[in-house]
Image (tube, rainbow, N blue to C red):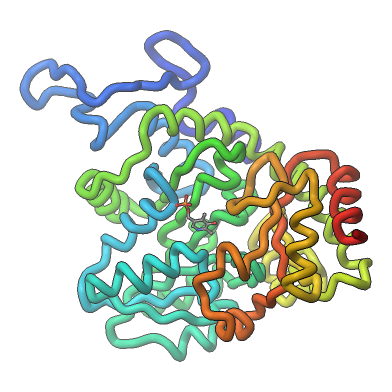
Length: 377
Ligand SMILES: *Cc1c(COP(=O)(O)O)cnc(C)c1O
């Protein structure tokens, strides 16, 4: 089954009881038992049919063993880090999502889990950071906002040889374009709030694991810590995901056109887009993903000019988040990455004038003329 078919026919289709073509919202907390211990579902934290339909869908899309749905991307990550114990050490991509950075540095440390941040786009740098107690590598690719690319297969082979678990945050590429488990990762995480939901109307997180033992452990943690996604939001997410393929295909074309427009402008300094043949991760990304996605970052020279541009766009809405039908624009150094000290930001390449856009599904010409008038003024 190809991806676009799988988005409609994967997981659990419809409702066996009524023939309804969409999975019903089983808005229920508990279930009648036929006799003590004789039941299909017991309690909705442990299992709920609507959530299970979503979990089966993401499992199929990622080609894994089992899927799990959580109340947010961060709840999903918290559950995954609950697989580890005091004294463990985890290596992270250095420019991970701000919330992942906060969880790693301000919460995991309370449980005596050590973390190291490294540029995972360079395998030799990862090799230098391995310790006796290293148990896992957490990779985000491409990253935010600089869209750095890590070679998943290469890191997976190295992780396996060293008995480390490889966890990949696949939010930016989505399962439509990239499937880390098929490249050797053990666990895939999504902030489903972004492309999977796709309509800026639900906050959710998804996890897929590659084997039965991990599936049992993650279900144990999900049920024990309880950060599940409710039936209503599970249903919304399934609905959003049905059009993931259409949205990603359209976004791909529009993003390419916007990139070409930005690349031509003399008043735009650097443009970061993995689809750029000059982008250092271009070839690696192309070898592991079917598309380059809808994110572009570009430097307009100064924080002042960036703010003026953000004030002027009409169709690009000034907002955090990404991956929705509506195009969004933001200023990472003052928004998502404001908590990183300026010195460190500059070291990473997050300059004061770095603007980030998430390309939606509006008309490409309208989006380009919107950026043009904002840059011209
Ligand atoms: C948004 C995001 C998260 C966090 O997900 P929430 O759903 O907001 O909790 C994690 N990773 C990446 C790459 C993100 O963009």
